[in-house]
Length: 66
Figure (tube, rainbow, N blue to C red):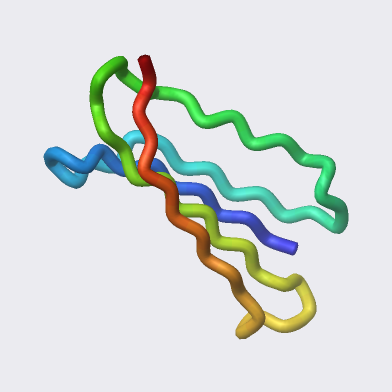
């Protein structure tokens, strides 16, 4: 499986953080860094099957740090 993670600051659409991992198990933690307090971000996580590239799942979150 392949997991792509992207964090974008909503106010100016700036890419703050990206991470890409390939794995055969789900034991790989992803730690998102670069959050500033009070700033709204959009986190996009795309999981792609290693055997079938058209088999993907995208999840998006709005998040902010306290």
